[in-house]
Image 1 (cartoon, rainbow, N blue to C red):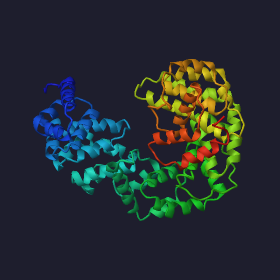
Image 2: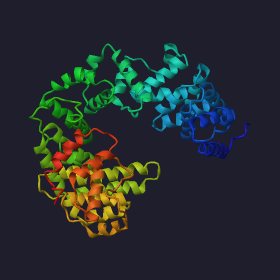
Image 3: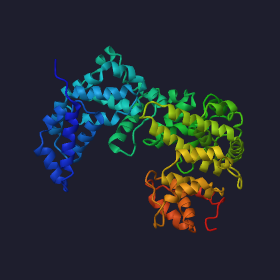
Image 4: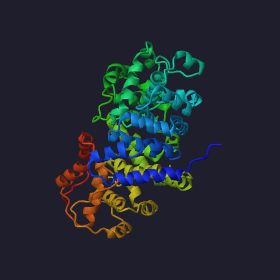
Length: 495
């Protein structure tokens, strides 16, 4: 029996390599060290039992410093392409994002390596997940099996794998969503190729006309909007534009508030995905029912209400916002449920996302719901003591406390003393507070509104606006300007 390798050996080797790299200042020094001073084949052998994430990060490092592909291949070979494939298999089976890993390791593969890699993933895994792959995942899997491994239709048919462009790609486009970071050109290309594969389907126009689910429309548009907006404008919009009010009501009634909110967000005038007008006679009171609210999250409800403003239905948005604003027990019950699920979640990897979801929901309450209410209406939940205690217990970081204080301040709501006391630890002479966890304009705005309030500074909106804009990584300000135009109706920064 082969002796099982100790994972600590791999960690130790990796730590030593990274420590050595950190002693160099020039790129050429690091390149020379990786290329000439370490034996990548021996390093590969020691990496067999460490995580795929660390293996991937090290492989990316080799590419970053332009180590020759032949040496990278030697590293992967000694590690074992089958072993790498087995690690990728775990990600696939757990529903994780594996696109980056496939793209990374395929670059150095020869045919025999690719076959070994696929053996590690397992044909059965590919067959079982075939219909659940996103369009870009289908494309990269098709490339791996056809181009790298050299498998043909006979192989696919005998193993029950369907990668035909006229069968599986359309289903993938309407039933799944690409999960890649589209700003990464190395990965975005697979989504672009998947659109090319989709268009080879001769029955595509007929299939599009037969879509009868709002979720499928949302998925289809989402997968196309970053790669082929012309197709959306030329093919999809004319079809949707012909729908009657009753057809839309039927689509909405068979869906949920989450999907309806996503669909309405496509009409955001600053994104300009869908640019036509929905029928004015759609009755949203039929759609925003007690049953729909009960099965939806608070975040989904607020998004739905706010996104009605994108289609010119401010009157509906205002009515629904007032209903939600007055139902404090309903809001608290939704938040309590989120906290209960968080506190009882045993998978620690899920907890950061759950905490972010709770934080996002609070921000939507403080901001989007308030913006949707008629001018001068108080946001009642902010005055509720149970809600205030919930915030005090769950938000303890300085910038989160400032965000809450800023939310109270900007909505012209008396700030509870408990938040003032918690924020006394702030000791700085900086004019503005630099956030660490968010580059969202309105989060930065609220944080600095809270900061200015605590330091008893007069807020000059023009200067604050310039600071917030400078901190936003996404420099598209049209959408921000749109919310500001709504916002300044409510508040005079100079008072």
